[in-house]
Length: 164
Image (cartoon, rainbow, N blue to C red; front, side):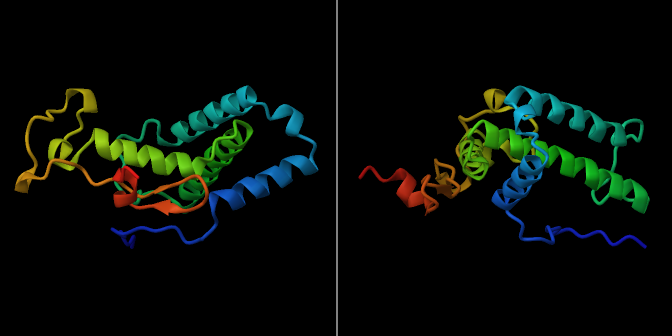
């Protein structure tokens, strides 16, 4: 029996920084840094995304929780997802992109581009959504998500909109 969890969460508190550090140590121990240029890492990432895609190829649509998948298929999927994440984190490191900070900023930008009242239940891209409709209750802005100030502090919505 497969139990479908609606509120799935990750089991580990491993941070992206810890993943970056573990991967950097792994690469240094093997003297691979010279091979880990942004271009090479991007191409390796694309290759891993291809391997990930192969797992889903020819299966048709797959439901949340992967009903009917064998433990071996799930393990293989976890390995390929891990490869993608490891290369993504390594690429961000080599490009000096603070990935957690970039994610927070991107989520905040997406909240502005896809306000709930305009995008609810729609798969339309932001440039074709109708922004003329007022949200229910007359509110005119989408709440901003918390973002980092670049110094490790989380900035709240009110701090993002203050002019001081």
